[in-house]
Image (cartoon, rainbow, N blue to C red; front, side):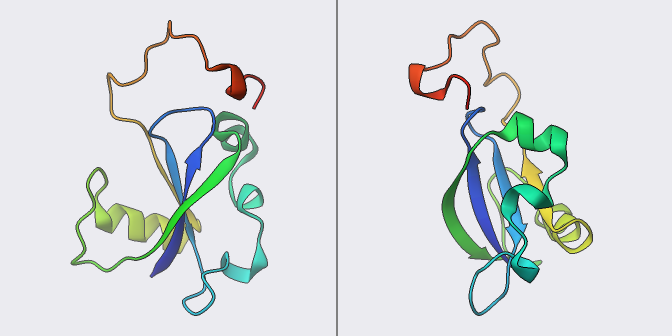
Length: 102
């Protein structure tokens, strides 16, 4: 399974994996990234910045996500959200100036 990985503009260490076409690495069926995600997730995610494309197999290890869960989500929903590790987000932190209203 091939996927593109995007970083959130609103939450550090939050990423979305989107299923893609193997040859072109384009989002499956030409669907826009934000259209794949439910509205509430789009709002929470903010702007998506491309990080990399990746070929996932059951044998491939991921640093902070279970590969089988990612593959299942990509096949059933077309996307997988990787949340920041617990304790990483400081709810009292001030957002950087460039990200306000993103």
